[in-house]
Length: 262
Length: 237
Image 1 (tube, rainbow over the protein chains, first blue to last red):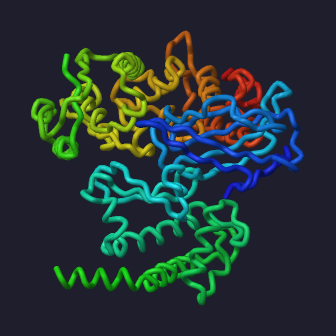
Image 2: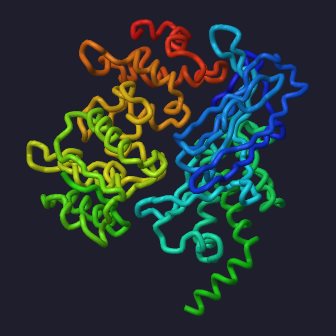
Image 3: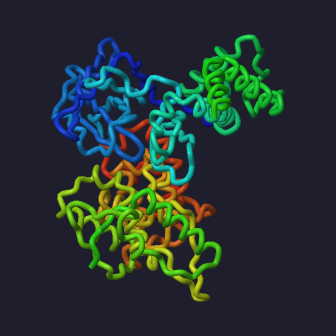
């Protein structure tokens, strides 16, 4: 895993300092409200505040006043973005007093609240997105680093099936759990399970511990550390998947019932 | 001229089947006539007629499509998600985006180049949709991505468009254009994508990822970004 050094003492803005609410207008129109709290962060009053809304290759940028009094400078219109689902926000505090815009502080992956629906767009560690996937039923994408389950929108009634059909759950989620954990350890790499560099690694390690509390994790998850044993790690992943399936008795019984009835 | 249509899921399925038959050695012509009626496709509303004239490069194609759709009243949002429209256009221009080689055989590449996917990991690989989209975002600054013939998905497209944070940073794309475009030859500078050459495009992306941790690249002019690059980029400036 790449290590990042913070030579410029860039500050991290905690997510509770920014809240964003999507406001839907008529038809396809949408905008957002944001509340920004930068008090006591010891940032220069004159530094500029920017908010960015992003998803996949779409990005819209909004000037949000100065640190002293953050406030929108425009109408916060989101209509130019192709999609609002799974939209994320970031905040940037930029020192523009010199020649180059120096990044003083930032926060990424702020999840907005949908004012019309009164809920977060994504709360789970595995957001689900419905897209045209050709002839694939599902795939995992790592948008903004964290995993997203993509399901093929061309399958009839797939939104309902994904939510309620135990066959979908039984056939797909164990494979997803296995793939995400494998990606996390064997592709990304985890240097320190106590303080993983990526937020989603922390969420998924915590999830693995919850479903598998009585099993000791491998000695190390770090591929570059002496003692890393890929067989042991693969066995641990297998146990997590097993325990995950074991914990979903309700779905399993419904699944068996459906199969017996068919 | 042909009226633009939107391939239905059945139409896309039939197009995928056609691609497979060509991969298996068939020399059947593309089924544009068969799939240009219901239930394989439906007419786009509003009605827009599209040229069947050949385009020499993807840049020409992108410019043509941007002009065409700008006067139609359709929004970027409506167009970007309309995978059936892009797939139908790929079928219409299949002879251009999958030409027969000297031996008379077509080399069908990955399906995503012809059947448009809403997922960005595949969307930017679509030879028609990506030409429109990148040109729409960057106009003439998209020439590194699009200078090539219609059937080519070049390394600039692969390296730049596949990275969300890179392709959305306008000033960085402008800097890339200034570094690697050879204005005299009207093509990318030689070896710009050669990974063994110092200061190649992959190295630039690696350096840009470091710079993004310190600087707000969006608010910096392309020239200022170029000044921050280390010595290995001197020969490209």
